[in-house]
Length: 160
Image 1 (spheres, rainbow, N blue to C red):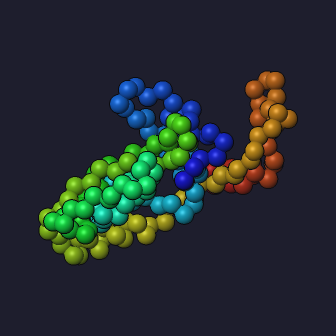
Image 2 (cartoon, helix red, strand yellow):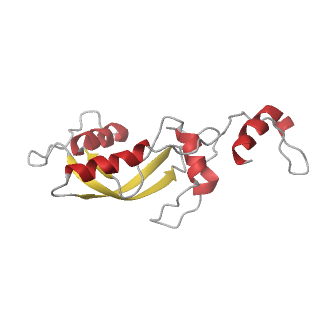
Image 3 (tube, helix red, strand yellow):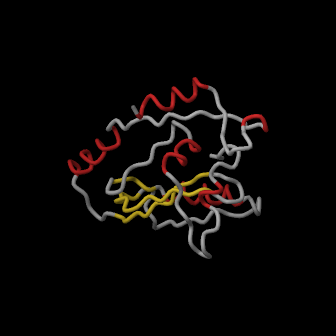
């Protein structure tokens, strides 16, 4: 899901080699959109290895004839515990993505799994944001930024 106008690049710029810098969660959510929800750490999730493999192959787009790897002994789905979620943005495309650390669970208690699913249904405060294509007249020589009063009111109502 691409970010608009390069808003995510400065936050993720200049990570040291081999290290990816996490970005502000509210900025990440604004770029990802309101329909994207990520489970919190400690939640039980289901991982679909074949679907993941297909997504990686599709995103690579390097060789149209490339075969998607097939692992016949790998289960179609794996129950896992989500240990960590790190939010990132691609510095070249501004596309936002989440990196998740999963640990397979060999056996599970059905009641514990249902309780963990309830955490996804909990209401969280909605982040207010707006999108605007900036023009030269939106900025001032003193470093200020001009935007509509209605946008300011909409974004500040939740914090008062």
